[in-house]
Each structure stands twice: as C-alpha cells, then as structure tokens.
Image: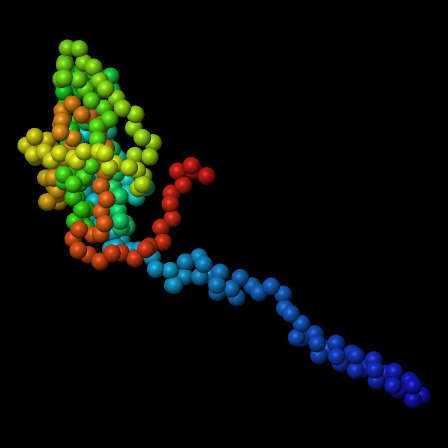
Length: 246
Ligand SMILES: [Ca+2]
Ligand SMILES: [Ca+2]
C-alpha cells in the first residue's frame, strides 16, 4: 500500500514536471512579420537614399553625335545619330572625383571622311555644361582616332583610323600623353537652334585642332569637386548596371 502510494506520487510529479516544461520549450521559427531586421534590409529608414534634388542637370550638344561616361558608367547617348542637331538634357547623380569620358563623332563616312553622299567635308564640335559648374574647355584632354579625307582631298579621299582602346572610358585609363582640347569659336562650329534654347553659359566649344578633318574624337577630364563650390555629396548607395543582362 505504501509502495503503491509512492509510485503514484512519482508518476504525478513527473506529469507535473512535463506539464510545467511544455510552455517554456523553444517556439517554432518566428513569422516574417516578427523579423524587423529583414524588413530593414529591403530599404528601411536607416538607408540614406538620393532624391532627384540631389542630381545635377547635364546639357550636352555634339556636332554630330556623342556618348558620355561618368566614372566608367554609360550615362548618356545622343538619341539622334547625326542630324538634326539636338541637345541631350538629362539628370546625373554626381560623384567626386568625377571622371568624364566622351566619344564624339562628326558626320563622316568611315571610308572617305566625307558626308552627304561623299559630297562635302563636315566639321565637328562639342560642348557640355553641368549645373554643378562643370563645363568643357581647354583643360579637357582630346585625341582623334579617325582623320579624313587626308589633306582635305575631295577627289581622292583617303582616311586614317587608329584603334580605339577598349577601356577609353575607364577611370584609370592613362590619357597623360594626350594633348589638351582646342577651344573653337561659336562662329566656327555654327550650332543650330537647340543650342540656344539651353544653358551653356561659361562652357567652351572643344575639339582637336582640326575641326574639319578629325572626325572621331575622345575627350576626357577629371573633376575633383563641384566647380560651383557646393559641398561634396554623400556616398550614395548606387549599384551598377549589369551590361551582360543576366
Ligand atoms: Ca569632318
Ligand atoms: Ca558635323
């Protein structure tokens, strides 16, 4: 009888122990709503993101076409191949130091250097202004990769092409041996109406020395800080466009 009572008490106590332990056992995985850290990772209030007011306006005019890279990234391409002449006006998110690299092309047949059914010699010209005060001038570097017609010979037009380096737009590309750009007068370039409808005040027309016979020109410059004296912007989160389209 005594033994049996002790046995029943033991079973009772073990049962109480199990009952008491059960509610304190570790719970299952928390629901997604209970993970604030995961929510923040998707872009919470602690991420300082740029607004459109943090961008600069870029006005760009090329006689006849251009593509523009900033710090190795393609930023703007002239939407019209050669004519009519147009201004490309876009917002950019500047980061300093800012390496700007531009490929500009005059309208010229690759085999003759002539335009309009090989009937005449055209001339080039490039001008750019950013609202941070960046402008084109003779401090930029310039190099021609396509000349023609050599000696301006219209009857027997010949051309000279130099291979364009694959990394011509890279930040670390070495342009130290290149000549400085040449500033040309507005009269010499003869811009069309869209130029006068945009703000290019303070910017200079640039090309190589030869506005007529140099047809593909690459320009490069490095801007250390906003030329208008504005403070350096924060290091915005950016990310890079994957050009392999994965
Ligand atoms: Ca030309
Ligand atoms: Ca032209």
